Image (cartoon, rainbow, N blue to C red):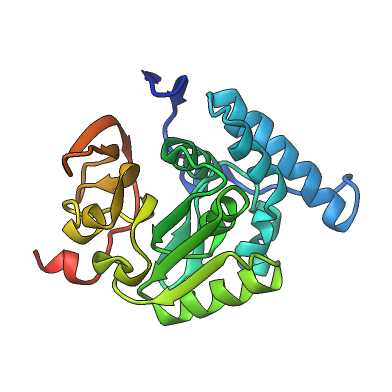
Length: 246
């Protein structure tokens, strides 16, 4: 069943496809090299992002620009623009494009913003954010993923992204406050430090739950409390670190 919800416009939420069901994408018959990926990327944005109600111009532009195929393993680059999460090693995945577009739009990013991301993973979400905001501070608990993502982001010229290895539960206090916080792994509950490091008026976008998860969009009030703006069912890898001890 399709669920429609108003949140700065209408978003239509569809079931997340499994990798096995999605199949592969062949570039045979397309232009060669980067032109082929650009064609697939444009198709991805039209059919997976815009057609499903994510129409924020800055988000759409960023997803047209960021080369998602550079953030997946080389052997899977031909599948980079299908509507599916893909494995990136270390039992982690890169989220399906629609979810990246949805979460980025839900954050409501502005050009001068400072954004904290918890769960760097491949670095793709950070790159999409970096194409919109002033600066992105992203934390990855797995050193090998942090190093790989940092190297890729640097090589592609995303100089406004800072990558750090650490437990995202604690956030990045020395760089706070943030205009927005986005979490790309499911937490059993909201991490208090992330709430504290969010500016009043800013948004926190986070999947919450263990088995039955939902994506929650919160806005921080001037009083310091949070207002829940919207939720939808999702499926993410679990957040690790201290959060799992509670």
